[in-house]
Length: 121
Image 1 (cartoon, rainbow, N blue to C red):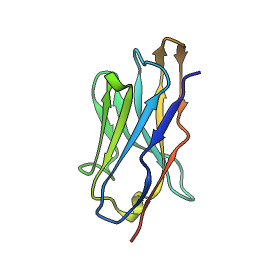
Image 2: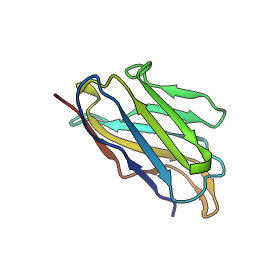
Image 3: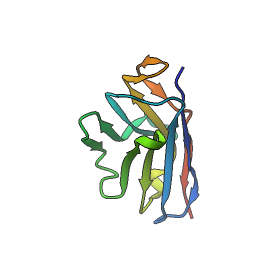
């Protein structure tokens, strides 16, 4: 079973920056989409940014111009660079991969365990 492991969450002041990482436990040969979701207390999980297989990146309006998602194939890792953070960005951030092909097999709808980001003074 392929696992996604997030890291980089923590407490940051408003206006600050954090970079989240998501590393897969196996080499990902191909994918339909890989991205980041978040879930704030009492709210539904929502898309933050998603890298599509054709190279396009779908980014939520609420984070456009502040958050950037990228992938390093050599490190098998995806990143979410978050700048100019706001208190409303406070949430658990999840890494997600859909329709991936790996040496271990093919998988759909794989989620990481989540990492907490708290934006507060």
